[in-house]
Image (cartoon, rainbow, N blue to C red; front, side, top):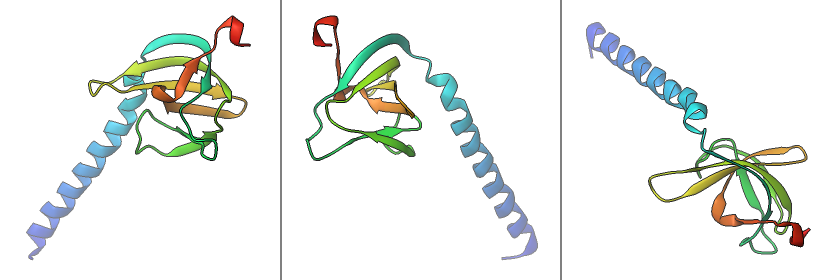
Length: 112
């Protein structure tokens, strides 16, 4: 590999890194979704397991915490993806992040 090819390779790699970083920077804007502002309980999780809380609404996103089954959380908003999965931004004490909506059950006044 000569010097010119090395320069082209390095420039290409730098471009890919910048493009990947841009994609992550855009994610918060895409996560606007619809407001919920309601309590929900963690459900559908085995009694010995926990629900992972993610930094972004994606299963491969960084884990920021975990919630035990049956715990009540405040649901701020949710978003729907074309794949059919819904993700909700939840808050409980010092744990805030995104969880898959299929593991949440709304809490109504009679449930409190």
